[in-house]
Each structure stands twice: as structure tokens, then as C-alpha cells.
Amino acid sequence: MTETTQNAPPPVKGSWEDLLSQAGRLAANQNDEAIPIYEKLISRLQAMAPAQRQANNGRLQTILRSATIQFHTFQTTRDRYDEALALIPQIQALETEDKRAGWDYHAATLLYQAGRGEEALARLRARVEQPDFPAINWGHLAMMHLRLHQPDAAEKVLDEADAWVQNQLASGKKSSADAQEEQALVLDLRSNVALERGDSAAAAAYFDQAGQLDPFYKEHLHMFYVRLAHHGQYAAALPYIERDRQHRVRADFWHGFVLKHLDQEAEAKKFWQRVVDTDVSKTQERSLMEFVLSHYYLGDPEAVALGGVLRLLQEDRSASWELLFMAALGWALRGNPQDARANLGLAVTRRKALAEGKQLPHESWHFVQDLVNETIQSQLAEYFEMK
Image 1 (cartoon, rainbow, N blue to C red):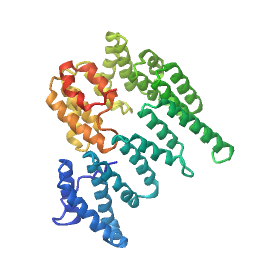
Image 2: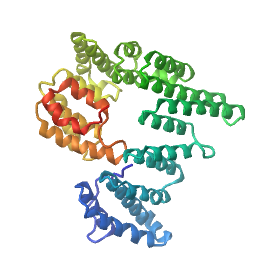
Image 3: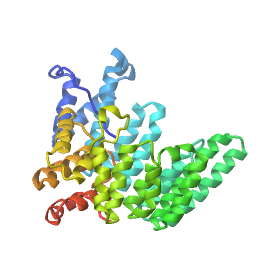
Image 4: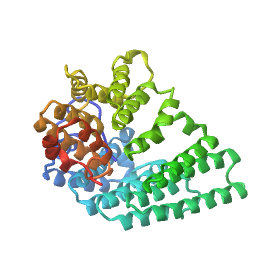
């Protein structure tokens, strides 16, 4: 989890805000001189009486929370996982009750990123043994098993989840409507397990059953067809793409993607061109990635898409790793591996900060393979997870 700040007037020199700003600038440059400043801020503010920190609309409490979260993020990006984990209880003590559980999950993903998968599983197992926990906790545990390539263990967790939902319904703790939503979630997770095993037919059956129980899945078909496409199940993805009439930009890009991989390049280009011709000011869709990728798959000869991405990055210095990846891909497409590597390095740092992984996901590598020659691919491969 990361902490961002809005543009504000420069802090008064020597103030608490100034110290926080100094530490933030150093941390942004991966400079360990940030460490003593963060430690000074946190230790001194923690030593104050809570009432003193809460004065003036909680000014010092806010600075303490920001400093602790920023320090945690910095330690994470520097691969100091024990230090980052040790800060989580301090952060939780500063958070509202509804946010503390999110930090528990974050701790588990941080352990996974550190290569400590069994500890991550133990943390997530503890979350499904707490009273009155939400159903998504089962999902987090099952998906961690999948990330560790343990589909059999994931399936056993989902069997437990099914039994738990039935028990909640029978005991009156869940309404029939709530139970149906949770059963649909379990079915969608079973779909993931089936895909991990390479069984697209079973995956489709589970996803369709989820849609029968909860219309959410029928309204968000991309959740399934994008998975299918990334697993190389191109023909199986087509019927779901064709049914997605609510998200035409997204569906058209992925329609082109799967047709390309079915050796129908000319047909694929028709769908990408349709995306490129879309007047984005007249659509409610928020499919920036698919819009940019459609340009890239058509060559982006005038660098229209790359230029747009670079403008967005200039406007938002804390942009997501996905946007940085889009910039890197655009540079690589134009034969510029140096700028591509610079953007990928920053993208990896942003992803690490979120405890999402030490490299970019393998799914992103698929686009590099499609669009970039092998010489440049070899210069970029180190930034991506490889299966």
C-alpha cells in the first residue's frame, strides 16, 4: 500500500512537514539517507501524547501516519521485507478499524513477494479462522495457492468455502441472496483453478454457473475472456468476447488479439481499427489500456498513443505501473530500448511498492512478444515474470 500527496505549498523549513518532504524526496530516489529521517519522525511523534497529535485537526497524527506508510513502502521497494513487515502493526494502530484487515492481506502478499510462500499461506489461513470474516478471505487463500502453483490445495480451500457458505445460510447468518453471491465467487475461483490445469471447458462451465447465480459475472465477461486469452485458449475466448456488448472498446481489442493468435491478422486489424476510430469523448468506457494497445498493434506510426501516454505521465508523477509499462512498450515498439528500460525500471518499483510482485506480470510480457523484435525483447526480459 502506498501513500500519495496532492500538490501543496512548500512546507516551513524545519517543520514536521519539511522533514516528511525531505524523506519523501530521498525515498523517491531510492536513497537510504531517507531512513534516519523517517525513524526520527516516527519515534518522536510516537512519543507524544495522542491528544497532542490529534490537536489542530489531527495534524501530527496525519504526518505520523504518512511517514509510517511511506517508510514501509520505501523498505518494501528496497527488498527489506522484515523491516517493512515490522511497520505494519504500527500502521494498523493509526488506521480506522475498516482499513486494518486490508493491511493483514497486504502483509501476506508482501511475504509472497519476499519468496516466503508458506508464511503467506499461514497468514491467509488465519484470516479464515477469525469470527465473522468476509467470503473474499477464502478467495485470497485459494488464489495464493494458485500463485504458488498448487491447484489441488486451492481446490480443497474452495471445498471448505462451499461448506462455509452452506453453514452460514443454514444458521441464518447469511441471506439467500448473499449466499448466492458468495457461491458465485467460489465458482469463479474454481474457474481459475480449472484454467491453471489447462481445462478451458471446465473453466467455462464454472464461470457460466457463476453468472447464473450473480449477474455481475454476465456483466463483466472480460474477467473470463481476458484470462482465457492469456492462457492461450483463444478459440474458447471468442464466444465470450462476442457476447460482451457493454464494453465495445475492450471487447474489440481482445477480439483482435485472439484473432491474431488464431492467424487471422487481417481480421484482427479491423477490430483494432474500430477501437482507434472510437471517439473517446463520447464513450463511458474506461479502457485506456485497450485503446493504447490497439494503436500499438496497428504500429502507432505517428506515435499518437505513445504521445498520449507520455502526456499522462507528465501530468501525474505517481502514475500506475500499468501506465509506465504502456510507455515502455511504446518506446520498444519504436526501437528505443533505453527509454523502454527506464520506464520498466520505474514500473517495477511501483509494483513492488504495492506488494504485487518483484517483476511485471507474465501477462504483460505477451504484448512485448507480439510487438517487439527478439533483440529488444532480450533487453527487456529481466523486468518480467517468466513462467
